[in-house]
Length: 216
Image 1 (tube, rainbow, N blue to C red):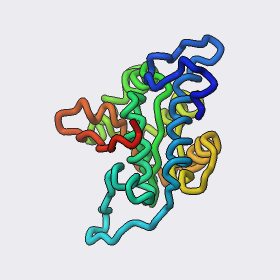
Image 2: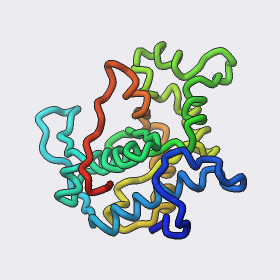
Image 3: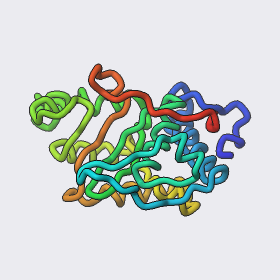
Image 4: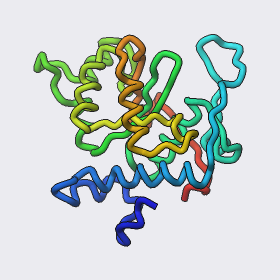
């Protein structure tokens, strides 16, 4: 596994962030890469088309446990699976929703996740939370109005998109990260970024994503 190079390594979320001055994000990335490798090697996942839905703007979604049990899933199923795994080890996931597609991502440090929300915008007065309120969306859902800021955090390496459909083609983790950036590159297709941790803290937000003990 990706953790085998360091006998003291383990799944400790952000506790090891900044442990190495020359590579502060390294321990966090290693944990995500290890989960990626385990899903590929242990579960041999396959991509399937979305199941039938009677609603034009809705889609039936399988739980992460069902995806692991059946070894297949749609793009949204695979997105939620990887997000659930990251949340389980206390690395903060996000969900990218673009036209006709979805894929996950993660914050490489909790400080940058907080700064994304609370830091000033170029006007020096507005922050992300105020902008979501002005747009009438929940405080954990970021729309095209936030896209420039999202791109800035991705470009700076603070926020990592991961193309989860590549779990079904035995692709490497870094290739999936490159593909995630590519999937995000068309601003016309972008719809929302959902911050899962912030959705949890909202009384009207999301409930935990279930995952069975196969990943423990």
